Length: 264
Length: 318
Image 1 (tube, helix red, strand yellow):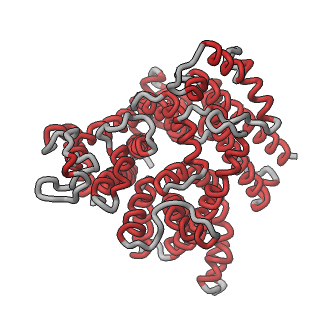
Image 2 (image 1 turned 135 degrees about the vertical axis):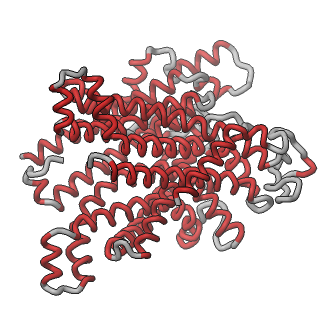
Image 3 (image 1 turned 60 degrees about the vertical axis):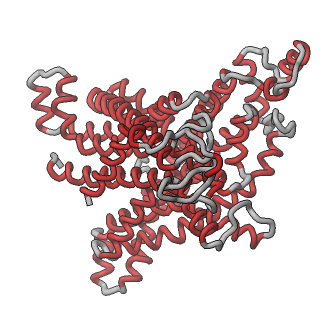
């Protein structure tokens, strides 16, 4: 099971890195005589209504479809882990202030805010990535903080403090390794959420200019072709679902495996 | 007394949230490039006077705090202004689109509860068995499928390939509407049902080790009676907590589902209004979304108070 999950994600990563070279055709090249054709030997997944090769566009779009979610996951995880550790370890006013803001942020209808922010400001994925980092971080901070609270009273943390180690060292060298399962699971969940949200934004026609080879945008542009060449819309849908499912299941398994060997 | 304090605190927090949300959207829309005069004039040639007249009509030259205060004052009295695009009162525009979204959300909620609760309970009863593993895996996979992807898959499978359901629109007669909204409701309910199944299963398993269930078993009560009569009632509490999450998922999910199935509901209205920079409509819809989330969370708190005496007597501070 885990082998299959890793294989799916590895293949996706290869497509993301080398997609443009692997593409059999120029993803923007149009062949109007061959519009909305079904799969053939020349075009394995057929063409869209402008005669562009679906497989080539999928491969060319893999890079942006996966790169930005990875960026969001890394940013969110780094931010939420350090802030959560800080709040849970230091407590006091830092913690009280942070928790107030987080309560407010979590109660916000996140996707609604994201759609309005990106829809109004426009300009590709830049704002979307920033907005998602802000929206995803609060929930993760809360989780990390509550785990830190549980760890800081344990004997090894007391010992580290008694030795007179600097707080940063106690937090990152002693407490952090014990939070690893959650941090890894959080990172994968953020990746999935970002992947799905970005594809969803493109599907709503928000964020990216028309014609960009992008999985979400392909679904939106080709959903009218479901009767002529269904693969033009189904292939990106299946890819998004496959990558999201694989990352979710892998996060689930990793969390269980890592926690078994951990302190709990 | 504890109840009143709790309610007062929740109410204050709700007001702060709505204030922040409205100030945020208002500021965002005010700062965005291309104001209402561009929407109204389009590419038509315009004189400086017409531009000035439009700016005066929408009070665009006032400072930001003044404009926000004026909007807020009107909104509190139920006046959300006039849509820049259609020139109709925003409340009328929203009331016009409400029925489609409301019936879609209600249908999806019905499916979620009718399918999710029994499946979660069955999975817990058959813990570790093939049925449990199947349900758990299916729930995890469904949770990972975004609503728009599920919409397209359902649309292709049941509307285009099999032809069982219509591809487009919301239908005219009540029966027609149910047929039209079935696929969209399933697409919307998918992830929510998965969430309920997981929560229900976890809650029921959590209870399985409790003394009162062991006692019920020891008395020789039938398994059905133990699970439905004793476990289900107690498992309802944590499941209630997901209610808020479900609603948020319902709100945003319907945006995608409406887009995929060509339904003219509130989601489609929001997407259109964002594209047209129709500030009053976007503003009202965001506030409506926030207000619904806040109201449901308050209702859930009240339900907790009603269902669980421990919360009422302040033994548990939630």
